[in-house]
Amino acid sequence: MPGSITNDEQSLIGFRKALLEWYDENGRDLPWRNHEGEAYRVIVSELMLVQTTVAAVIPYYHRFLERFPTVTDLAHADEADVLKLWEGLGYYRRARHLHALAKAVVANHGGQFPHDEADLLALPGVGRYIAGAVRSFAFDLPAPILEANTIRLLARLIGLMETVELGTSQKTLWAEAARRVDPDRPGPFNQAMMDLGATICTPRQPACLICPVNKFCKAHLGGLTETIPLKAAKSPLKPGEEVSVIVKRPTDGSILLLKRSVQGLWADFWELPTFWQAGADPAKRRDQGFEYKNLDDLIQLIEALMGLRIKPLEEVQAKPIRYGVTTHKMTLNVLGTELISENLIRPQGFLQAEFVAPSEITKRTMSTAQRKALKIPLKG
Image 1: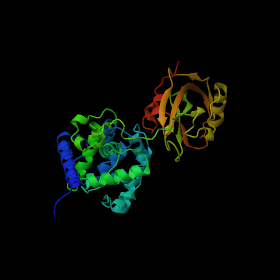
Image 2: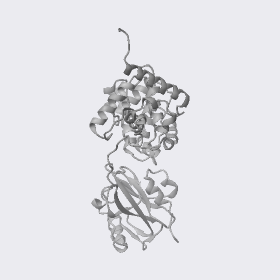
Image 3: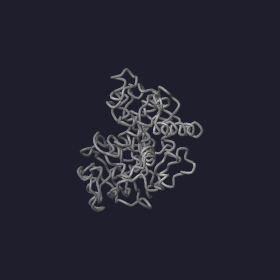
């Protein structure tokens, strides 16, 4: 009959209705929502949220927008200031992408975010997910999104029985996300999908009995919610061990810091002199001659690399600092010493080397592990 709809279309309409009704009552109250047309807020929040929890992001989001309230403010900022505000969130490439993106929006689009998907994808750090988030959340356009929560939710809804990392799976999930998005309320729909995945359709023990769309879910109906989504086995993290040295100048209490180069891991960051000891070496310390063998050799190495004479080295911490970076699981040991005399030189491969007063150290951009190392008091 002309004008009639299929069972599949009826099911889709019912799914959208049930999901949006649930969201209107139960959607999370997040600070970057309900700002239609403000693509800048969306971009800032989404880049911060990559591999980071909502709870961790919220205070950073507020501080970032207080310092850089518009994309133009961010475009004109110094990268060092941007990185400093990002300190502690990790994955610092996101901050650099956000800064470069702001410059591109100001230079190429007059400070206004484009609506077109191709133009958004041309911006630094913007992939298909963030482009879809901007188009749906900021401009209320029917664009699909796919991220951790919606991948899990969609895989269960359609009963996907292959690992979600596969290219064919990703193609299927993107197509399903595009098919389902509500054309009348695309922004709230995508937010509802994310919220449902985050709060109800959780990775383990999902709350299927109170899920508003459980009757549309093949995994629930087939008893497969603990099986789906299928994921490829993860490669084990590569272990590595490093040694940082706190060199204190006794005359004024200042601490020696080095500034890393503009390329590679922790580019432009400050750190204590840190030496590779064993295992993985993600920061390429051995390439710069920063290799720990034993205490006596290390004292000679510090003199050769930095022109310093120091007192004997001592362990200053109760237990090592452990941190993860990229695909590595690192152990950081900390040694302490005092300066005897100096003819400070900048080691090859670093931008700067200087003794920094304790009151000034907090102003320097550093990794969380290095910041922890600096909090360890020296003996004596």
